[in-house]
Length: 203
Image 1 (tube, one colour):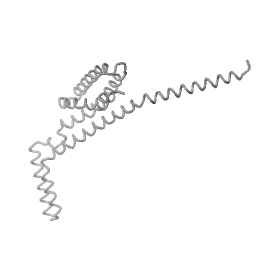
Image 2 (cartoon, one colour):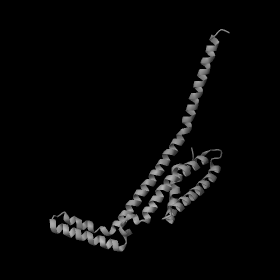
Image 3 (cartoon, rainbow, N blue to C red):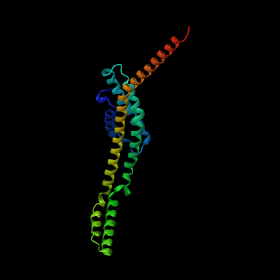
Image 4 (cartoon, helix red, strand yellow):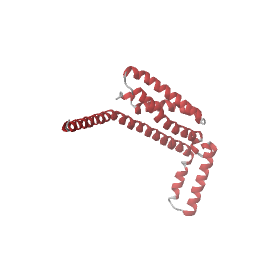
């Protein structure tokens, strides 16, 4: 079992912080993003492996760490990060990317709609539309917050999955040992039965 700081979920959470710092550099260039993420991940794993050799000499954990980070974690992160870069590059799909003109026109349209609704219905609830119209200039920020919160949630799911993989790896050796012992016991029992059978036969 590796030390807590070398657990897959801890390593991947720390790696996400570093990758996220570099991610905006490659908005609009998916190929460069994939290559950049790979380079950063490999550098991080190699640094951890160098430390690992000193802390856990003779353990195969370094090889396992490299495989799980580069083959399990990195493809999932890359897919999510590239998709988020596309959303961010598109202004989170706000009209006209949420520029001042778009905000002004959308706000005017919302107020005209609220005024027309109240004029023709005279319903008190129509006044709530005016309150909603006040939020229209902030729709781009609301969209950005929602996309980013969803993205962080997806990244957390990846880290949680790496924790589950780590837990299964921690439990694997005892299970493998138990299975090996059970197999050996079955083989030994079969050998004893065969020996008793031979002893009972005439020479």
